[in-house]
Length: 253
Image (cartoon, rainbow, N blue to C red; front, side):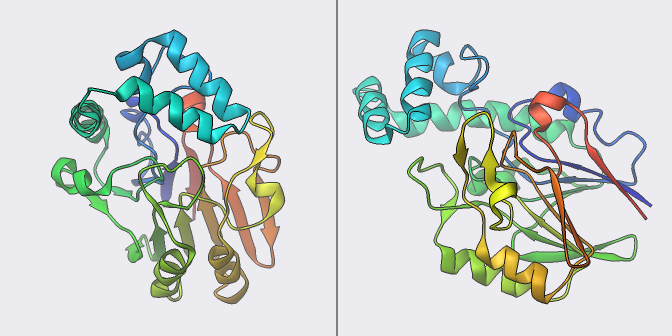
């Protein structure tokens, strides 16, 4: 049995259409949308609306962790515009292309930049959306936890620690623990290019210790200090920044 796993697709529909080749199933750990490309400021919803120069300024403010200034800058650009309508229009356009690229079967959960309310509208037969839920694939039980935890970035699908922990607890015993964000381990949470710690989940780490799944798979941190680490019997793996790499991580059993 072979499953290919991707995360942080961020608009890479071309490679996503090939991600399931040679596999029995595809698992997607979220962040389908590309709002702003930190490597190429000309790409994404924000530069499409406001131009590359403004995108560059926003990236500089966020990278410097000047989040209040970044929000004020963005708020000024949106003045007089219907923010929700314009973003939803752009997101719908990306979702239509990305969900059409999913092979059958695909098992997917949300990332922190995704908009869960729209997923079931675009998910076709053969794509199963899970969040705080389990599914059996080839005799192994996969548990899925979508979204991220609260941050100053205020991305669309961030939830409180307690609500996130409840979703982890609802999974029970699983062989493969799938999430968008990593367990709360410094080496797994630190982004070496952004030079900051992304938020990891204490509840996921506790599940690794108590449930002891074979694998804990995640993404979110694009350039992690450590891409994989063994904790007890559990192999913790950052499956990679699919937007940049264009190749899935493979799980064979």
